[in-house]
Length: 372
Image (cartoon, rainbow, N blue to C red; front, side, top):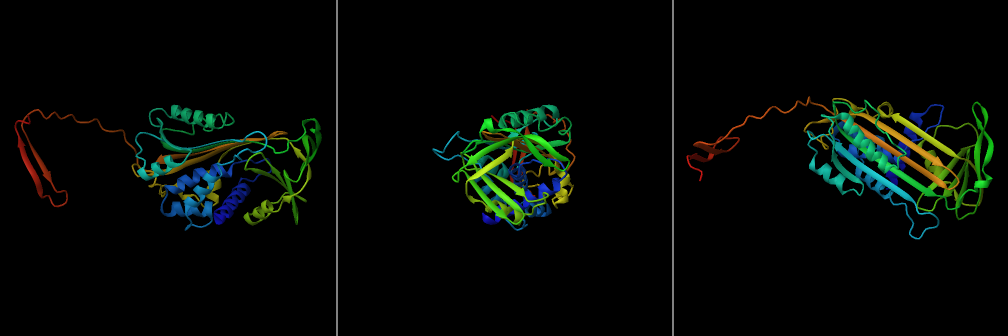
């Protein structure tokens, strides 16, 4: 599991850096990795190799290591823990049109997950209704923080399946910030100082940690559950961070009292990640060379888009976050509507023959004149 965790930190750093930009960025490595891990579970050939390299840093790695790690992360409660109990909700759902024959093993593995399900949606006959079904389910899981993951037009008549991960997480701080101490303070941006609501807490060593490495200070803030928040504060301009640096930073804090000034936050991101994933080397799944036959080979599938939305709110009581990732899929072969069936009524004498498929050897031959 240690190798899988280090690889997950690498994935986190790589996507964060590729999302880039000069503005705020918030996203959920848990949600995106969960969705892509399920795609990888049903992938083969180059498609699988690329996803494993992206998610685990090694095309020969086992995707189940990451699936198990993500599953363990759904356990956030501490029995008899202090403060307000945590809330978490996770859903991993494969939505398919009735024309798609989902591989039995893939469906079985997905349904075996505590948060896994396979559901039908009318992608062909009513794409908007399918989109609404998915959006309502995501909104329910995320407590309406992600009310419309799939905007109009994302699901089209060529969409035949969508794999969705949704996450909701609400945690209270072990030691809450003092609401009366929150007041406007300067926050130094590249455009100069801006006044923002700045929270304050005098944190004891049992609820806080502190670490310092060259170029960085790190504050760990404990919650009332099995979740910690980390503030990674550079000494100068904020640099890009790789997996090794991120691992070092998260391991740096030790229990220590901290007087922490922290801005209140309300961050949100909506992004289509296909370009990001392609730049990171996982582009085959979007092409006609995709191999997702472990999900379905009737018809074979390719990924259309990877849509992600994340929301994170941080205040004096704790934090509340939600995220969802949808992997929409198209059919590689042209799916034609079924031909009208020919009706045959066997209501008169007939012959009945049972023959070997390859050799033509007849096992049984019968003439039926009265089946009664």
